[in-house]
Image (tube, rainbow, N blue to C red; front, side, top):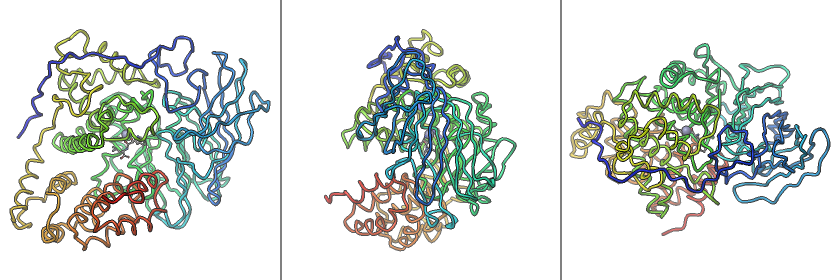
Amino acid sequence: MKKLLAISFLLILSGISISSCHFNSKDKKNTGAGLLTQKDIHSLSNGDSISIKHLDLDIKVDLVNKLISGQASWTMENDNHKKELVLDTYDLGIDSVKANGQKVAFKLDPQIKFLGSALHIPVKDNTTKVTVWYKTGKDARALQWLDPEQTHDKVHPFLFTQSESIYARSWLPCPDGPGMRFTYDARVSVPSGFLALMSAVNPQSVNDSAIYHFNMEQPIPAYLMALAVGDIAFKSIDDRTGVYAERGMIDKARWELEDVGRMVDNAEQLYGPYRWGRYDVMVLPPGFPIGGMENPRLTFCTPTIIAGDRSLVNLIAHELAHSWSGNLVTNATWNDFWLNEGFTNYFEHRITEQMMGKSYADMIWELGYEDLVDNVNDLNAAHLEKDTWLKLDLKGRDPDDGLTDIPYEKGSHFLKLIEISVGRDRFDHFLKHYFEENAFKTMTTEKFLVYLDTALFKDDSDLKKKININAWVYGPGIPANCPRADQERFVKVDSERDKFLLDTPVEKLATVEWTTHEWLHFLRKMPPALSINQMKKLDDAFNFTGTGNCEIADLWYIMAVRAGYSHAWPKMDEFLSSVGRRKFLEPLYGQMMKDPKTTEMALTLYNKYRKNYHPLAQESLDKIVLNHKPQ
Ligand code: BES
Ligand code: ZN
C-alpha cells in the first residue's frame, strides 16, 4: 500500500507576484471586492464602474419560432457620473431603450469575435432605471432549442440555457462578467402546459396561466442566470432538496439522486451553512453539452449520470460544492477560473470522502491526476505551455479555451498540498472562514494569495518554501511536490489487468466488488490497442458494448475504434445519437479521425447526429470532424 506520496519539497523561494493588476481607487465598485481588482477582458460592459443592483426581466419564450423576446430593466446608481451605461449583448436584436422612463438613442457596436456587441446607453447622474426591449438571434450560443425528437420523451419541445462562461449576453443584455453581481426578479411567459424554471425560487408544478414569477434575492453574476422550459415534472427528496426532469425520466432521476439531501448536509458540515434556501437538480434532455452547471438553487445536469446504480452522482457533489466556491466566492475574471473549479474539485472530493470513505475518494483523486498528466502532455505538444499555469492569460481568446483539466486538477492538487502541509483541521478552518468572509464577493488569484498568506501561512517562511506557490500558480506543468492519492484500490486493479494481459481467463479475475471507478482505471490503462480476441473476451464477460454507464461506454467505444472491434459499432451509433456531452463526444470522434480506416465512419455519424448536439458542441466537433486535415 502506498501512502500519499512523500512530498518532495523544492527549495525555491515562493512569493506572490501581483502582476498586471491595477489599483482602481477612483471608481466605487459594486462587487465588494476591495481595491485589488483586475479588468475583465471578456466583458465590454462598464458595470464595474456603475453600480448595477437589480434586474427585472419580463420575457416571452416562443418554442415554435425559437425566440425569446421582452424587456430587461436594470436598477442602477450612477455614483461615478458616467455618461453611458454599456451592456454586453451577443446577436441580440435591440428594439428600443428607455432611461428613467424616457426613450433614449442607443448605439450597438459591430460584433467583436467571441465578445459580441457593446450596447451603449446614454445615462445621467440621476439615472436609476434603464430598460431594454430586445429579442434573441439565431446564433444565441446560450440557448438550445430542442425539437420533440431531441428530448427524452419525444413529445414536446424543450429549451434550456447554458450561460457560463460568456453566453448570458446572448439571451439578455447584461453586464456579463463574473465580477458584476445583481439580484433579479423575472416574469416568464411560456406556451400553455409548459413549466419554466430558473436559477431562483422555483414553481413545483405547471400553472394554468402559463406565466411564472421568479425571485433571486442574493446577488449573482450573469453567468449564473439560467432558464429551462419544457414538459417538466418534480419529485421531492427531502424538505429542501428535489429533482426536476422530463416527465418520462422523473422516476429514474429521483431514484438515482436519492443521496442529494444527505450531500447538502455533508457539505454544510465541512464548510458552513448552505446559503441559498432550496437545492434542486434539473436533469436535462440528452443534448446538454456538459456534465453539470451550478445554477444557484437549481443545478442543471446531464442525463448521462442516470446510470441506474447511483455510481456517477459525485458530479452532483461537484455542482453542489459550487454553492460555496464559485457562487458565494466568485472568480473575478476567467483568468482566475481555477478559483472556481480547483476549489470545487477539492470540495467535491471531500464530500465524496465523507460519504463514501477515503479509499473511494482516493480513486477519484487518482483518476483526476491521470487526466492532469494527459492534459499537460497534450497542451505541451500543442505549444500551449502557458495554459498549464493556474493563473491563465486568455486575452484575445475565447474563455472556453481555459476549460481544460488544469484549473480543476492542478487547482485541487495545489489545495490538497496545502491541506497536507498545514494539517486538515487548520486548512478546513481556513476554508470555512474564506467562504464566510468573502461570501457574495469576487476573488482574484492575487487577492487569494494575499489572503492565504495573512490567514494561513502567516510568517512561516519554511512552509511557504515547501509549498512553492509560484511553481503552481505562475509556472507550467505539474510541480515536483504534487501530492498523489493512496493507491490502495487501484493497485489491485492493476494486478487484475496484468493477469488479463497475461491470458488469465476472464472469469478468474477478481472484479466482483468493483465500482465504476475501478473499471475506468482498468480500461484506461490497457495498452493502446487490444486484439479483437482480447476485446471479445472482455465484452463477453463484462458486457461493455451497450452498457448504460456512459463513462465506461465512452472509454470502451474509444478502445473499440482503436482495435477495429466492429461488433461495438451499432451500440456506438446509438450512443452518439443519444449523448450530447462534449466530454464524451470529442475524444470518441477524435479517435475515429485519427485513423484513415475510421474517418469515413466519423463523418457519416457526425452528419447524421450533428443536429442533435448543442451549438457549442457543434462548434468544437466541427473543428475535430469537418475541418480535419488528413495527415
Ligand atoms: N461550471 C462548470 C461547467 C462550465 C465551466 C461550463 C466553464 C462552461 C464553462 C461545472 O461546474 C463543471 O465543472 N462541470 C463538469 C463536471 C464536473 C464533475 C467536473 C462537467 O460539465 O464536465
Ligand atoms: Zn465546476
